[in-house]
Image 1 (cartoon, helix red, strand yellow):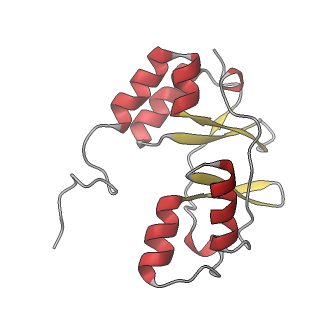
Image 2 (cartoon, helix red, strand yellow):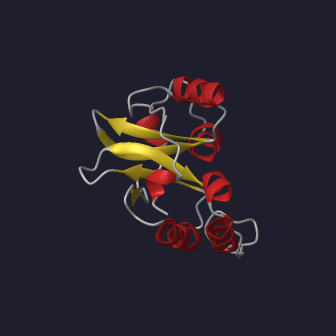
Length: 147
């Protein structure tokens, strides 16, 4: 099965110039914890609820700070014509639950989530979840504490 057969196609995006409050309102409206960040028609980042909490609020930035100042810039993505199996392995190895989907012209055409995989292909969802759930990583509460 191809990514385009499982992905969510109706994706809202925000601009790096939007405020964090604007982005949070969009996330609340679509009931999502992540939103892609686009500059004109190019994917430049992802903004998660964790980015807002850690990179904005915890550092004293207000609701008027710009998305571009707190978004995740190093974005893992996939292509719509890749197989679900290829992408599931990628989700697990990077420990991510959602991945933006691009066409071969590098335009955002969707987003693939662990939930999408579970609805379309239980085996791939299980493989991705096993990788995502392994302990450790920079954002894990089970990672070693550095002094």
